[in-house]
Length: 396
Length: 120
Image (cartoon, rainbow over all chains, first blue to last red; front, side):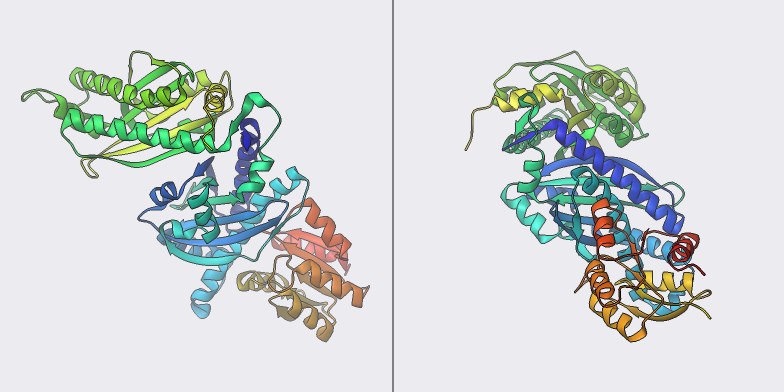
């Protein structure tokens, strides 16, 4: 079974528009203005679900989809955010909370989920020219990936599950949450099949590439450890399909230090390694011989980060080249020290001349426990990646 | 005399909200939490208008509307739902719905829709 990346882009767009509609619903219902950060889709395995949702406690509203699109949708909030939302909803509707207790508070969140998911799904139904039936909403509380429906977790174990995630954050209030949609695997793959061979990727190769990315992140973490003597661990590694325009916003406005590499070969693209400022200084000092240290980002830190980035990038892409049976080269490191959005915008601008969406490999490496963090973003040319993955020998 | 309205929605929150919106201008004759209760309530109370959610347990709002309008071809039912799918709207009209409001709504939308269906 093959998926057409243009179809994947189309559905990503629908999800993004659906999330905007959902945000509008919340604004109308409770006067809460929400910003839709970005919508991405990934084919995730059980282990990725476990990493993504680990150590978090959620309140959710779950609805099943039947008919023209089958699957599950979940509005998930971290528990403390759910309490904030309940208060805002009951205040906005002048409901006497004290006389009704928690039942009504739960009902308010459940109905909000129902309304938001309804808005989210409408665009899909209209696009597919079909009716999508929703089951009544169900209020749930769970830790970790258990906030997702059992069927989705089971599918993730078997062949992976497509996970659409739209992150929404409050513009005036400290409130953020995610809308997840998990379409039924086989039906959705059919919907994604398309008819342009140049854009098609065998669906199981997406998992192969994700595994490859995870190995690459593991290699990079190992190299940081070897060069600094610090403990490292790959925290999260995901292959996500995102609108390119959303990538800079996703990286955010914090200050980062890092290196940007241009990749040439099959696939071409970009690889960006970013450290927060403190992590960069910690790492650079750990790499320097003798007692020489820097308290701020200076030439020694720049040199150390460039060198480390070089080695990490090689470790990251060598695995790709070996499995894809291609040759991939990388440019010399381009040192960057700026806000995340400012670093990513030119990268996205160059790649955006050829494509609107991108498979982004997003890996986070913990350094020395929670003391430091490194993010790796790999953005291959999507058509070239599709070509390289399609050319792999069949595995099954 | 105030027009008589029934509310069918599985969400307690939404029933409260609709009651607050309507109770100044209408007599609320009862509330139902699912499609079966909605049909029974309609038969018992014979309201001037029924505000009907679509996605409800046991029996959906469209099925309930179909039964209500089959039994009473003059019944006035306004679908009051989070579902804005064109196909669903067609199904609701086919089932005999007289109006359709998409949640979330504000008081003027609800009153305007009711006024369109049963002019004062």
